[in-house]
Length: 107
Image (tube, rainbow, N blue to C red):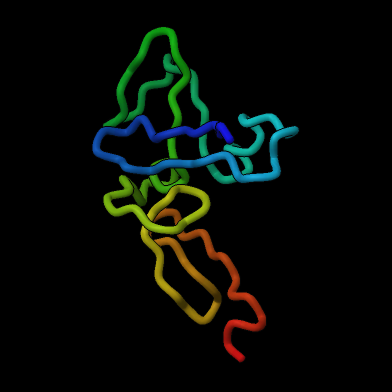
């Protein structure tokens, strides 16, 4: 199966978002926006981000919240950043997305 993917345009950021399986009928732009990614016109230049005259720039949730760049890949479904297990669930070190634990995991 071929899936869409997006990477962060910030220099040295390793963030990656892969289209989840089973979402073939959804618009990819909607999926990345729901995951916290920011699409901005290239004319809007932010410090530390490249300026491309005719393209949209993609910012991962961590960089958009100024907690990036993602330096270590892991299992985060939003940015592919490294995660840690907390009481609330699996939490991303970068974008802080929390994926709740499955109920049967702690039994």
